[in-house]
Length: 185
Ligand code: SF4
Image (cartoon, rainbow, N blue to C red; front, side, top):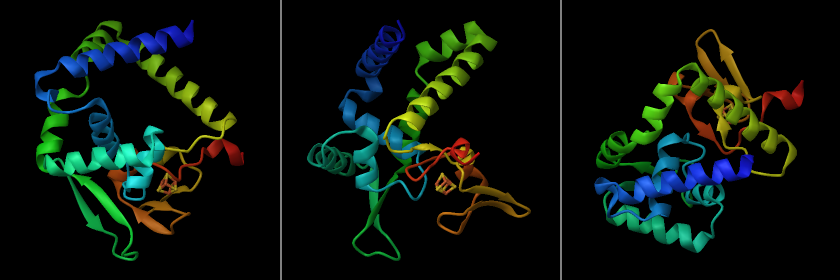
């Protein structure tokens, strides 16, 4: 059954992270927040977006973000336009740490052994996620380049929602404002 498979894979991942010597000082929720901040774009790196993405309470996430800041793994910066809003970004030590542990060795090794089947599986799991997002009222958090607001112009990417240009690397990041292109077609 699909649910059993997803649950088993997710518990294997949790165990692998918990036993990793480089992650001994990080609680699972702190690691999840770091992984999210490494993948999200500049519109999605606020404490509220981390809370929405993780689906946890504001208080729990706030404590975890404070702990990450105290460990020197994230920094807060004030929004240029809205002084009440803050953005969170990873420090260099956090980036080095994630580069060491991601993707999990067991997953990378199994994917390599599966060859093209692993690519097919990734595609199908992406389709599963998009199907859920289209039919349920869940926050977007999709890949920028697949968003209906994304336009490719002669000089690069452009977001029609925020009316701002997008750097090439931003196309590969996830965004809380994402809406699937299929909805408009
Ligand atoms: S194009 Fe969509 S996903 Fe990309 S930044 Fe704009 S709203 Fe976010």
